[in-house]
Length: 210
Image 1 (cartoon, rainbow, N blue to C red):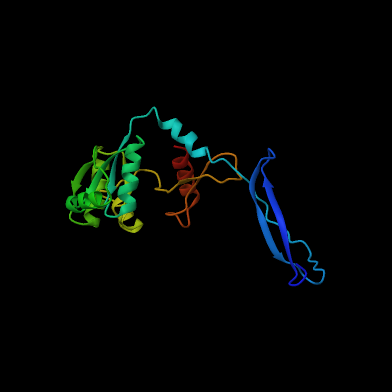
Image 2 (cartoon, rainbow, N blue to C red):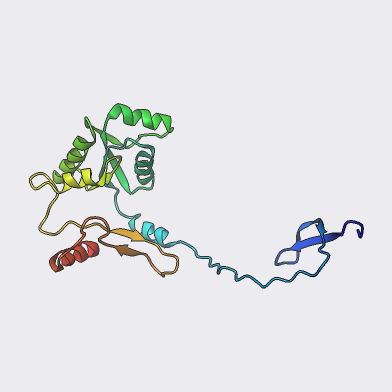
């Protein structure tokens, strides 16, 4: 259309098999002078299949679920995570907190507490100490942080008389799955030991190995 410099294009896009997937017309406003621009460098795109956690999950399917004290599961994320772990066969949650609020939260989120135990606690600090006490007594095999701060939980864990201290230095570790690395790896210590000594590092490494 010379009057308004418009060009109508008949368009077809095909897939790798040559099958048309998009057809139609495009009307564009043609420039009156030649336009030339240098090409922009495009970002590199890599596609990776994240199967590492699936592989780790397959290693634990034959193990019995751990009894785990969940400290003050007073928020959606904690309660949902605990129940998802239970559904996956990883944990048998012992919910340490306000029973009425836990049941109300579950009802609001339409979650079923089947298979969960509730250990009453008057507040988050008490819940942290009760969860640690359950671990000391061997009633649970793990403790999960809920709607409490790391400091509050670690204060209970590090208590010299009623905590979970052993002859080794306490350390933190988490598993990371990085797309450009061929297997998962453990990062330790990223949360507790700020300036570890050589002896601390020995314990940190041994904890990660175990």
